[in-house]
Length: 265
Image (tube, rainbow, N blue to C red; front, side, top):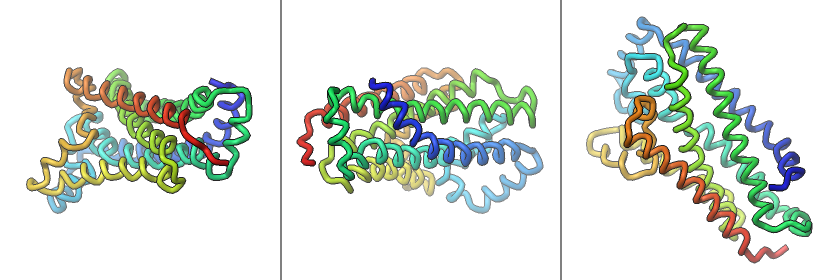
């Protein structure tokens, strides 16, 4: 890793990270505040009136505990889509923008290898994701303790967010591989994002009706089972590990592909 480059890029990437973190925290506090039996009855009536819509956004089951409530209303859609927006912005900023503007030539002119260069850039993306999850976890715990003391187990929430990070690592790895490997700037910027968005859309369609329920098992998102991870289920833990390992592999493949690219400046 090249520390000066890491610090330089991180300064530009912290702003979008904090913007997404602020939006995520806002939704999190609202959702936690909605954990109320009376309001839960109203939500149940809405869910019964529009079951397909609630199922599409991963909100089919309200749950009986605060953790189940938060997971069902946040982790099925919002905490996938919003960080995916951040990943798209950062991957473009760290890789595609340098190639598009030609500034990559200045970086490559330094006495550093391409692999070290891209590892530094990938380190910025990974750091921003870790920062996002740490901030999210802290605010979830603070909000839960302030509104419903003792209702949310710290260890369970940390396990859920660790699995969430593995999913984000997979999604960001797919975007990173596309940004590094594809020669066309437009394709490099959007191919990985489009693929990840397709995964999300297919997952949403799987909840619309019984005829499409089989779609839930055809995307990598099926490996993400936060409540199973919190319960210590072997399959859920293995799924989260598979997502994390696959994400790291995508980062490695993207970096290797960039190291062998013919860049015309």
